[in-house]
Length: 105
Image 1 (tube, rainbow, N blue to C red):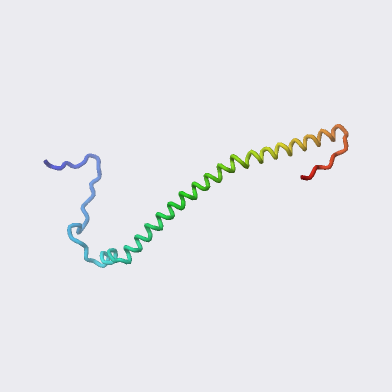
Image 2: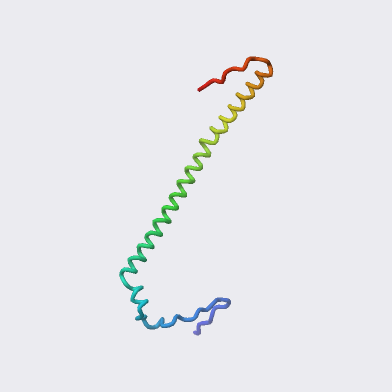
């Protein structure tokens, strides 16, 4: 049974010298133990940084949602109270009452 080429696919040419092992200087350098250790260290560093980014993203999401749920309503309520105090002070001045000193908490 003959193998038929795939339709619409891209066929790449075979690598030069793929049938025999390379004996050049580049092959010797890439197969050295120092290069393999460096490659392993780079892979490990990439893995650690990927996990760090994921955990940092999770921590940022937790901090953001906590801020939205707990702090934003507090800020809104404090702003409402400040507006109410200003409105009461304005109404008191319109009615001719002496301005009351603001209460310090």
